[in-house]
Image (cartoon, rainbow, N blue to C red; front, side):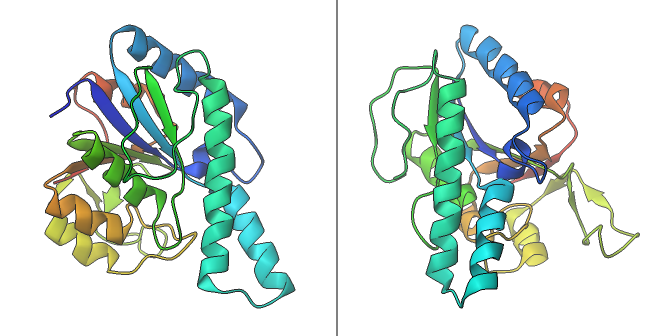
Length: 228
């Protein structure tokens, strides 16, 4: 177990919501990571495509028929654009190269390693699990626009209840088995299968609540869902 390494799967919509790049979020997120790195913590940050990916996907569909791979590559390149943005934001403490392949181990000694989309068929959640496996991390923190996993879709049922802790078996029953580019599952079903096999823990929490993220990093009580 690598206790000094935290893997964060950062939802692209936190970085690039519908109204454009969220500068205030980036400033606040940068502040926390810089402070933690000074304390000796190291991070692997894997970022999603956000509204940039969805905008390109919608545009492509509106113009002509597209294949599943076409959609996936648009999303992958959006994650890489966001990844380069993060690498620039963390230039002073980040490894100079943004990684794309979670099967190839790279020697790095900086406080932060930035990674992005890999290849068609694999989400950034999956990439995060693979990087965690590669560098012997046992926990992935998944930051997105949701506060917790619910037992039903909150947008469809007012009776949906938040879940604090859930097993991989029960979580996978909730989300199904398939993943598609631009999907909004709390955590990718394919990544979930791998995380369960590796006996990995995933914490799902709201990305905009950075005080809550600090509590997670400090090992304190937090609001979110732990899947294990």
